[in-house]
Image (spheres, rainbow, N blue to C red):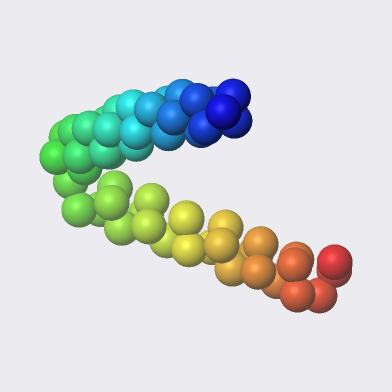
Length: 59
């Protein structure tokens, strides 16, 4: 039964971090505009492509 309690604590921490990230992200998007959102999106996509290439060819 101890593991179930640990999972609930982990889920609560993840939920709080998800909420904080969405609030921070939406405030930054509203403050900096579409150019900022576009650059952040492209940055995340490039990181994901690099990770996929690493996992595919170098692992």
